[in-house]
Length: 219
Image (tube, rainbow, N blue to C red):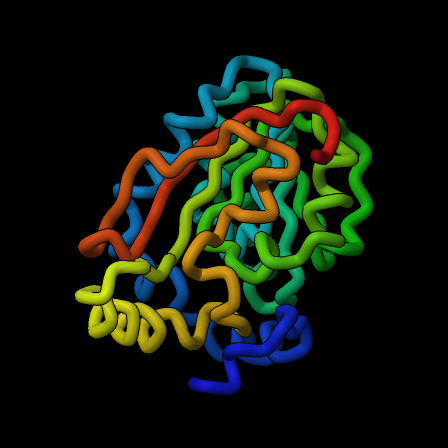
């Protein structure tokens, strides 16, 4: 677990981990269903919007996002794990969402995007949030004023939270490749969204949900 304090996320390690996580991912993440619903509400999506679901995984949020943007909108799911995106593709096919949802199999640092986003969703994507090159590429495809929502695990600074932080580290160990930044996971987002603020939490504060607005340029 200590090795997870690497300076930058490890893409190859993440791909290897999610190869084994993919088959049971939907059932293992049911406990964040309420946070998923809250995150989508915070995006304030409108008919015709373009939304990026960054590191969309198996695509559990794609159907609801597609309903929010409607037939004139576009949902773009970005995912680097072949096993995870294969499940997302099957979900899109099963739900008949192909006209609205586009899936991009690539890392956030390398994703080729053709649309300009009105909203960006980072739901439990800690490694992406700790990668400045990934954020630079993603926000290059965002409109000024784009709504940004992020959620994930976090550490707390208070002395009494040490046992809780250890539990958080153990619980998150398979889903991220670096613990760096967990005291303030949204720190790099603030370059693009200076008003980003956590607005809700779960699991005794070991999880956060926040929102902000893209200013149109990095600070």
